[in-house]
Amino acid sequence: MSTKAQLIILVSLLLLMRIPKRSEAEFEQWCVADEQTPDDELQAALDWACGKGGANCSKIQVNQPCYLPNTVKDHASYAFNNYYQKFKHKGASCYFNGGAMTIELDPSHSGCHFDFLP
Image (tube, rainbow, N blue to C red; front, side, top):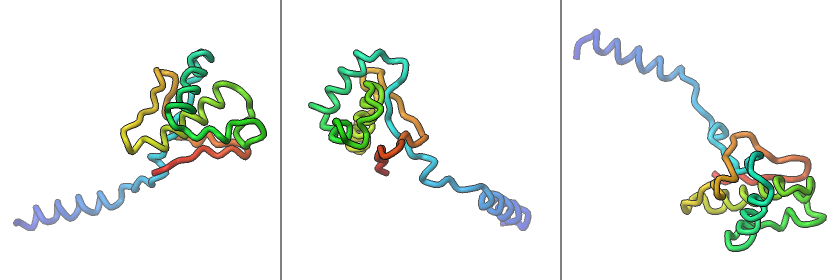
């Protein structure tokens, strides 16, 4: 290999080393209710997630940390995320008949923690 080729490779490697590495946090995603979805559709998806879907919805029950705000959207967001995190490695999606979407900003609030499982 010529000296010129070696120099090009060396410079390329040095430039690649200067590119900032992405942290794992940059790839974290949570599943939440889409604000444009009507409450009746969110409620149906919430009922499924907490029932046949297998999400753990205990934290959105009365007097639990994620009960407030007591809205269908907030409860659905918690349930959708719990389901998504629990089953995403088995092929689950964040779809819920078009009523949900993934976000990269942690939706946790007050004492309500939304899980993220890598």
